[in-house]
Length: 324
Ligand SMILES: Cc1ncc(C[n+]2csc(CCOP(=O)(O)OP(=O)(O)O)c2C)c(N)n1
Ligand SMILES: [Mg+2]
Image 1 (cartoon, rainbow, N blue to C red):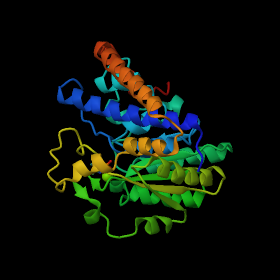
Image 2 (image 1 turned 30 degrees about the vertical axis):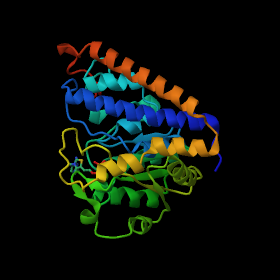
Image 3 (image 1 turned 120 degrees about the horizontal axis):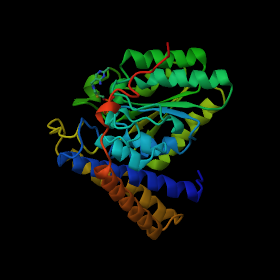
Image 4 (image 1 turned 120 degrees about the vertical axis):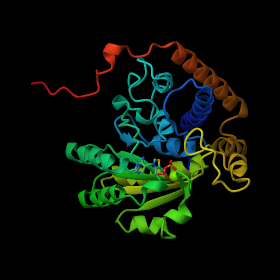
C-alpha cells in the first residue's frame, strides 16, 4: 500500500504530538497543576491517527473518556486542548469540559464521553444525518473493549445495519476495562465473528502499527463512504499508563508494561519502517520531534497563564436557551 509522503509526515507528527501531550499532561497532573480526573491514551496513538488520516473536518468522530488522542488526531487545537485540561476560559470548551468532555464541532469532534459505549449510538445518529443529507460523510465512534458488552453498543451496531448508515465502529482493545482483563470480561473467543454477526465487515489491526491500522481503517471507511452500510475496525494495543492517572496497576503481569513500551511502540515501529523503506529520513523525523516538543511547551506555558472562567461565566453555555 503506497502512502503519500505528506501523509506519512503528518501521521508521525500527530502520533508524536499525542504522545508528548499525554506524557506532559501526566507530569503536570502528578504536580497537581491540572484539576479533575484523567485517562491517558499513551501507547494507543496509532489507532486514532490510523483512522483519522482518512477523515476530513466534515466527517464526525465520537470519542471516549480516554479521548485526548482522538481529538488531536481529528485536528483539535493542541493549545486550546491544554487550556481545556487546565480549566481555562480560553480552553476549547471554555474550561467547562475538561479532559473527559473535549469537543470541537468545527472539526467534526462530537465530543469525548464519560459513558462507556455512549459513543456508538451518537455516531449512528451522525451517520443517519449524513445519509439523509445525501453526502459521503461518515461517522466514526471510538470505544474500548469494555464497551463491546454494553447494550448501547449492540443496539447501535444493529441499528446501523438496519438503517444502512455510514457508521464505523472502531473498537480499541487495550485488553483492560478499568482493571479487568478482556479474557475474564468477554465470554467468547472470537470477537470479530461475534461483531460481524450483526451484518457488517470487521477489519482487525495491530494497534502498535500505524500502517496496519491505516489499512484496516481505509477499508472500513471506504466501505461506509461507498454507501454499503456500517463497518468495524478492531485495533489491539495496550495502554502504557494506568486506567486513570494515579492507578497503581497492581493487576498488571510482571514485565507487562516494560514489554509494551519496548516491543509495542507505534513511534519506534514507524521509524523502523521508514528506515527500511527510505521514504522519510531520520533527520526529518527528528525535526518533527523538535517542533512537537516546542508546541507542547508553548501549550503548557499558555495554559498556565490563561485566565480561569469568571463567576458570571459559570452558567453560560451550560444549558441551551430555546427562547420563550
Ligand atoms: C456506562 C458506564 N459504565 C461504567 C463506567 C465506569 N467506567 C469508566 S471507564 C470504564 C472502563 C472502560 O474500558 P474500555 O471500554 O475498555 O476503555 P479503556 O478505559 O480501556 O480505554 C468503566 C467501566 C462508565 N463510565 N460508564
Ligand atoms: Mg479497554
